[in-house]
Length: 414
Image 1 (cartoon, helix red, strand yellow):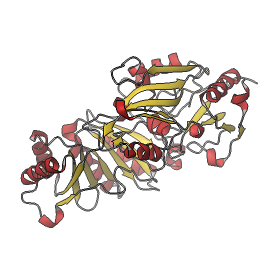
Image 2 (cartoon, rainbow, N blue to C red):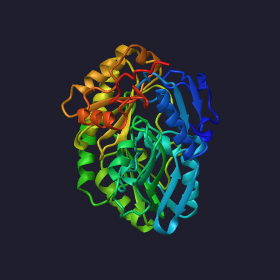
Image 3 (cartoon, rainbow, N blue to C red):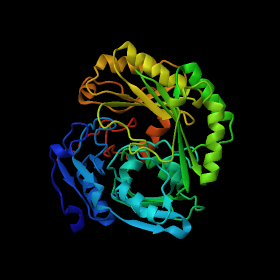
Image 4 (cartoon, helix red, strand yellow):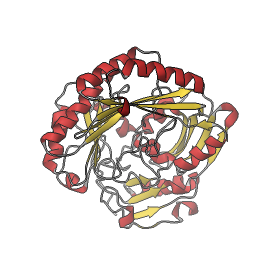
């Protein structure tokens, strides 16, 4: 092992716990060479490895089957911004807020709405959940044009590049987005950027019923407004709401907003229809506590899925709330802290029983892990995903059990 690789290794502690599992040791490499040396040493010793960035998603995903080493990417902080080409290369440990501030000074942005506060770019990629404004620019993985990763054997690999039209390696990078570090450790990534829009309008309308919601969404799909976000907010109790974000020039967004309101708002109480010129401070953020269930459904069934989640939550006296993109068919049902195993099971079984819907537990509380609740359900393409895992991490040492591809890691005898 290189000198760089062994520097900073320390015993793991409760603050390092991943879904309640305390790693035997933890390390924070200072650079990519140090990261490579660390993973090479882990390979030589047969250690299982878990990864953390800002620590905001250590309770996401499955509980690790083992964690001999926790790799903290917080030392990999770097921003290499080429404003002229609208690209940026970023170290995995760079805070998302820091990156956003740097880009904003140049009038640009990474077109992603983080779903957690305080996270890093590496964590954003490893968990892979895109925020509300994904309609115009695509999901997070579509913005990645290059990536540097360190493989489980400690070898550095790079895919793509820093030029938008360079498409080599796109698929390799996409494998790591949402992979929870199960295929290797993301060291840095290059993204294509977009100019900050000169103006924004947020339209918020009440949805008195499912039928009302479906009519409004049908009207919206037929319009030429081209929104940046079409978000549902559907609680068990209280009024459900539809939020539409328009971006562009001040004159353009005003015109489009007026047109949408004319077609969407008739019959609604005027005092419940709101128009704002900025997003709320908590835009896109998911609750920091409790269980999160990700729903993937056909976009035309998004309102029905949100309503069904509310119906199931009401049936088990659990105040769930479903938010997410109606246009993308990607929703998240937030279950309050302390919900029983029985209640979450009813929710999952009810949602998974609908043909064409998938429900994945993104974050489960300790008692749900302890009860062995099925986090994943039926996953399309699972055989292919597991084949990729077998090829890229044949020892199944990388984050065993954190993702659906997990298989028990067999520790090497000392």
